[in-house]
Image (cartoon, rainbow, N blue to C red; front, side, top):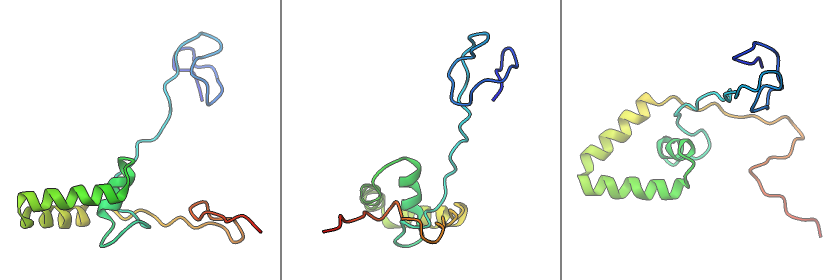
Length: 110
C-alpha cells in the first residue's frame, strides 16, 4: 500500500503513514448484495439480505413475513420475486480436501 500524501510505501494494515503522518484510508472492498448460497429456504433472498446486514437470518425472515402480511400478500411476493431475479447468486466456497470446516462445530474427543 502506498501513502496517499507522500506516495511512499507503508505497511498494509497501518492507519498512519510512518514518513509523513497522514491518515490512511482503509482499502476494504464494498460488499455486494447477493443471494445466499448456503442459507436459503426458497431462493436465498432473505439469507442474502441477512448476510449483507449481519443479521440473524431467522429474525430477517420473520420481519419479512410480518411486513408481507401487513402490506398484503401481493406486494411482498412481488418484491421477493424481483429480488430473486435481480440479486446474483453468491459463489459456493469450496474448502480443500482434508481442511476442517469452520461452520461445523467440532465436538471434543472423549
